[in-house]
Amino acid sequence: MISIQAAKYATMALLLLATHALAFIPSASRFSVGRSSPFSLPLSVVQKQQGRQTQRVVMSPLYSGYVPPSQEDFTVKARPLYPKIGDIIRYYDLDGGRADGEVLVGKISFLSKSIGTQNSWVVEITELENVGDGYFAEYPSRKRNSKKTTRTLEDVAPIAASFVRAEAAFKVPRELGSDIPQVRAEQYTIEGFEGPMAITEDMDVEAIQADAELYAELKFELLRNAAIAGVVGALIADLSKGQEIAIIYAAGAFAGLGYLFFLSLKTDTVASTESKLGANISNVRFALPLIVVVGVAIYNLTQGDASPVVNANLLNTVSPEQFAAIVIGFLTYRIPLFASQLAPIFKESAGSLLPGSAGVALQLATDNEEATESANKDGLTPVLLVSGPPGTGKSELVKRLIEESEGKFIPPTLVDSVKEGAAFEQLLRREEFLKVDGEGRYGMTRKGIMEAAADSDGESVVVVDADVELAKAIIRIPGARVIGVWVGLDSMEKFETRLKEDIESGAIPIPEDETKETVLRSKKREIAQDIEYGVVSGVFEFTVLNDEFDSSLEQLKFASEYCFK
Image (cartoon, rainbow, N blue to C red; front, side, top):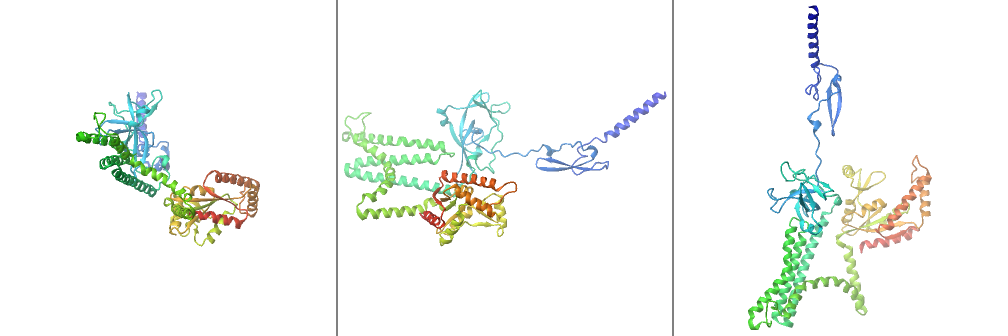
């Protein structure tokens, strides 16, 4: 009896201990951020890394081995989904882009930015053939061009497809219970997209707009000249062959003008959403000469006995003279093209063909006109780039050139970190400086180079004293016409002598872990690499070997005059 009673008490004691133990089991509410244990035990703070954020979790040291997961633990920041060439995408047929149209799968073959828009992109797509079981293959090369189309970037959706070599096709995931391709997202990320890697260089929007305007001017000039040539040809035909042949000639010339117009429609719509429509409409140009021939044939049939065609039949409805007038009239648009191509040749040789002073005068006038056009070539801003290895004395040459030029040559406008601290820090943070001086005070930018010349209204040219690395950046400045002058020495021994002098004078510091000999060898290797760039880059039209300063300065002045030619 006593043992049974003792067993009861022991069982009750175990249940009581178990109940107290359950009170210490951690819960999400007990260890939430900023809350302590209800048992007032000593607390510790644990730093948890959640992605890029740091979460402070306050808990008892007794339970610090367990941290309950929160919703933030499973939150992953989505990466932007930018398009690239070769992506597999879903798009719709030509029903206006409605979702109830035919669903197609294609491959991005080209990306281009719409001119005049901030962030609008056109995608060229090559359709893929559905070969069944979720596999899509590329069409044979002979059909591939006919399967190309274009859409705006907003109208396509990316697909997470994988290429299966055994099938020579792309495996496309499908929505559950259907054959509709499953997309990664309904649309690519457009905000922040700056284009594929091949075109990440800064684009000069003004230059692109200027090219578009130049293209429009050339197109108008071509159509105008073709129309003028047609009118002149018709007048000549009227005087030589009569009114009837002149009218037929004019009809052929009008057909040639129409051919140019429809051809321009195809060119204007390349890499745009209307490219397929433009290509189809432009095909009308091939029918224009046939329409003229049919018109002349109908005219001859209405003339009866007065028709110039004897024994007319289905294959004999136009006289040889009329057919020749149609063909020559149609090809008249080519005459201005040939004339524009031959004009520079005749212009170049006319001075030598004319006798005596007349030829000399014409040659001088031509040279002066070319010099004037070259000074403003394509609206580019001339920049005199003086570069070369260290130790050649180029900096002193540039300094003297600016001092003695009376304002013809000016240095770039630099950003001063003392006077323009906020702007300097912003440009430094955005890595827009081409060069910062050794003291970290002055910085050179593309804008500073171009604006220095603009402020002078074209009367001055900016001259840049550049090492090779800076020279590589200068030649990539949009809108600059770089005139390169390479300053060097005629032997490596002279470079070595000047390097030793700079090392001895302290101009070239010696790091603690190096010696004079190791620094000298390193500098010689750098000079050899710089010389190789100067020789093979093709950037430098002039070379000055700075052995004698005054003579080298005169050579630099002579080369600099080409900035104004």
